Amino acid sequence: MKLNERGLLVVLSGPSGVGKGTVRKALFELEGHDLVYSISMTTRPPRDGEVDGIDYYFVDKATFEAKIENDELLEWAQFVGHYYGTPLDKVEAQLKQGKEVVLEIEVQGALQVREKMSDAVFVFISPPNKEALYRRLLRRGTESTETIKKRMDKAEREFPLAHKYDYIVVNDEVTNAADRILAIIRAEHAKTERSIHKYNEMLEVNKDG
Amino acid sequence: MKLNERGLLVVLSGPSGVGKGTVRKALFELEGHDLVYSISMTTRPPRDGEVDGIDYYFVDKATFEAKIENDELLEWAQFVGHYYGTPLDKVEAQLKQGKEVVLEIEVQGALQVREKMSDAVFVFISPPNKEALYRRLLRRGTESTETIKKRMDKAEREFPLAHKYDYIVVNDEVTNAADRILAIIRAEHAKTERSIHKYNEMLEVNKDG
Image (cartoon, rainbow over all chains, first blue to last red; front, side, top):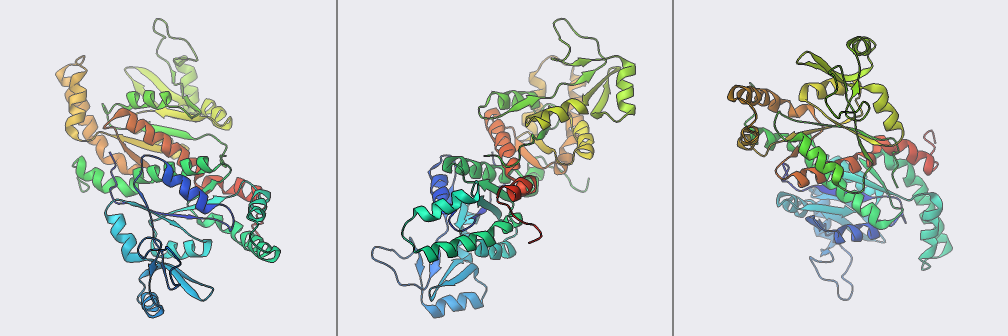
């Protein structure tokens, strides 16, 4: 029995190359949860096979900029001339249904979310050491040495931001990391600050008494 | 990989009759943990078959009172003319070994522990509703109506203290409750405040840089 029935917004983030996507996939493959993935909004045109409302919400620039203007995005960024962001209303609707909404985003985006949704759960995914992260960046093999160097520099700037998160989960073994994130979600629901209201109702606790 | 290697002191508590002992037993039967049960100290004489250092630490009154005097007990109480308490040094030694020390105690004792060990994890075990608790108290069948009435009154006074705990876990189904407590323990280890020191070492984060 879950006292807190509202879903949690779970922000998975971490340095460039740590394997956020792999951990997120492993998390969704675990049993015993009600996780949904937050779909981003973008102004970039759909690629072959991409479906609006499944891969992304595809919108035009004016629509996106109006959303920025009206503070309707949880976080947003520009990347190679296109906007990417998380629509607040979609996230809210899912949270109300009791779903755990998982956002897998860059460190800068996560810090934006923190300002808007203070009751979200912020998980920093960490490599077990620097070498593991460097090896992972090199292993991809699709990027130029210069790009890899840039990503390493970015990671170095992101390492010291871990202290701004609620939890640090080491991605030494992907299923371990996913298990731990699921434990965090379960524990967060049991937190007194999230569950005391329902508890007081349930046991007819008179707070003035 | 666990960033916080020190064990946690986990205080399981809750209103009289909620089934703390049953939940604690179910918790110990789960896999994937390093839980130990904290052994109490008492001045009551050993019963047949009870072993010193296993069931209790049996001591005389002067020894116990010296421990109270020297602030060497995490919590203590008097019950039917005998002292009962939790020796601080034993708990500390186990925490240093990375063991999760589980204390299953009454609400008043738990609030004493809170004052001495602010980094302990406090779990309030709640009945799913008042009727469930009353039925459980009556089901024992070993106590007089007057005793049961007293325990119900005690529970009523304990219900409003849940807000002083870190987590509230509903004991609707004992293995569910135990699972959730194990998730809490795993999540607590991943908390940034417990793991940032080791993280900074691991990734050579220069806090002044």
